[in-house]
Amino acid sequence: RASAGELAANHHPLTKPKPSRRLKKAHSRTAAALRASSNDEASTSSSSSVKDTDKDVKDSIQSKAKRMWTRADRFHAHSVSGGLYSILGFDVMYEWCRNDYGAIFGGEMSKSALVGEATTLTTGVGDWSVAASISVLLATACALSGIPLAQNKGWRKQELSLRSIAFQLVMTWQLCRLNSGEALAPLDAIALYGCALPFVWHTLTYIYVFFVTKDDKRSVLLVWLGVLLFSLQLVPTALAIQHGDLLNLREGLPQMWEHSLFGLIWLLNWSTFGASLKARNVVDDVDFRKWFLIRPSALWMLMYVLDTTRYHPFSSVGDYAFTLAGALVA
Image (tube, rainbow, N blue to C red):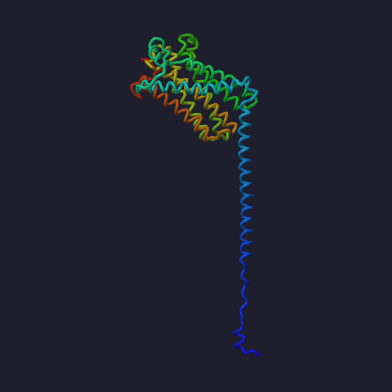
């Protein structure tokens, strides 16, 4: 029999067998293959989802563009005239700003501006150009051709179209009255009443929109207040027309009013276009406020400041306020 010491000396405790090197390599290769396969599937799935999303966005934009380029727009008069006016009108305002800058700081001025400088005192036309006249015609065509498109689009779309046309007709008439001499004088007696009508209409509409609809309240207030600011130009012009004081206006003021009215017509059309895009979910409320309200308004204000600096019709802010922007002639 073996002794206890021999048994203890010969005892080997049970241990886990160590895996061979071949098994380790096989296991690592299998794991790597599985990881690569899962990564390929994930990347394929991700790229497929991105392509599907891009396709959906592209299809959405194309479908919205097709709805805007519609057969209901006969001869596409509304779309074409609106697009041309947006571009040409912006170019006209840019030229006026450049001419103002040139007159103030001694820079380059266009030929039409130089001719206008020589003829302002005798004709009152100033630097009004053929391009500006064509722009006004395009704006009028765009507004009137949009009436049929509002049919069967809901009362809000129809109301917006008619209200915009009311504002534009008032501003276009005032602009033509400044340039046409006495051709439109028979309407002078109702100048102030005609000017007040679209503002009252606009206020009543936006009271309803603010309290009844679910429209973004900031956009509603911004549009309402922005259009009310149009009165700072339309009311003085209407007063001067109705009182028969156009020929007695301060030097440079007719040119300022022409530029200002033209810019307001452009702002009205551009903001109405933005409202149409927002209604089709092409732009959201933030982009609508940024690109169709705030920044275009800043362009108009820049032009007004440059005009005021160039022609200098007011001696102070108090002079501007007490004379109602020059409408009250001493």
